[in-house]
Amino acid sequence: MLRRAEFFRGLGDSRSPRSATVLELLFDIVYVFALARLAGRVGDDLTIVRHTLLSEAGQTVLFFTAMWMIWSLNALLASTYDPRRPDLQVVLLATMFGTLVLAVTLPQAFGQRGVVFACTYVVIQVGRPLFLSFALRGHAGHVFALRVLTWHLASSVLWISGGISGGLGRGIFWTLALAIEMVGAATTYPLPRLGPRQIDSLRVTVSQEHLAERYNQFFMIALAEVVLEAGAAVSFPGFSTEGTITLVASFVAVVSFWRMYFYHVRSGHASTPSGEGIQLSRWASYSLLLIVGGIICTAVGFGQVIEDPHPPIDWALVAIIFGGPVLFLIGRSTLERASRSAPRCRVLYLGAVALAVAAPVMVLLPPVAVAAVAALMLAAITVFDQRAHRRVHRLGSESNPTLS
Image (cartoon, rainbow, N blue to C red; front, side, top):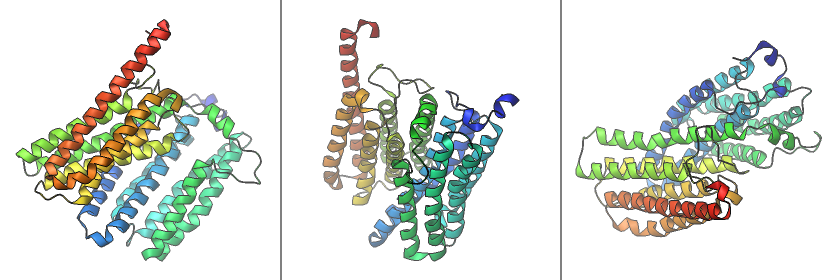
């Protein structure tokens, strides 16, 4: 428990623990529901007429990125300051409820619930830095909180405008609003009249172990989506030859994703639950966005094959089944700092290229065969990845006997 004296020291003087708290795990429960909703939207996108496929898929990507922005900023907040503090717990719980409201409104966010979605999103994204701007007064992080608040206030105008306008204007306004937030996060929210940036002090206080563990936990939640989609699809009609083959393929994909995500070059072993061994890159948040997006696409692809295993296969389904692993491999190769993951980058990038090259030919195969080929290619990439790790670890042990 947090002592009373520690609470009254001020938020800026608190430090995040190395391990994630139970409240953060509770927060992720909402994202189990949210990811299931997003997976449902991806599945719906595959069943609509082709002249609206691009716009529908664009809406799904927008929702996914918006929900991800909320999660990633919350993870950064809890990895910078102590989430055991009562005031931060209130912020996390309020954000959790707001995220639940967003997930509920997702199916009709471009319809009747657009204003509810926009207002809820703005309250979350503006309320967090607004709280920090008051809680961090007199601390170095105060200026940075004002920067974040200013950028989100600017984007909030577009979010509300899109919610009111509807139609094509809603998509345009919301896309611009989300683009502002992503550019702001990528450039550390620059503003010319608020003094020098306080990013250096922020980097010092962020607990890399805490943030890495949060990434690990969210990755596992996304991975469960593959099991959920495939298992639910098989359980409804019961076991069949095609369904069983695809279920095995989905399991192989899950194991491959898990192995490639957690295995590290430096130690040659899987990372610990606390995230030790991971040195996150500057773009780690965007990398995990690709990783989770790729896993969701893969989950939906396998689920669709189980539900309708009869040929011919649709080109859009091929793009989902093979595009998901490509996104995962690109995201995983850039998650850690390049100095520690160069061999991994080469193997995973080559694997992504191999999947992209093989995808066009898959339209000639039955859907079950496409799922099986994708799983086998993922398994092969995993094997080559592990060989690269063992080679690097062996060479490192030979050059430095203390590592062995």
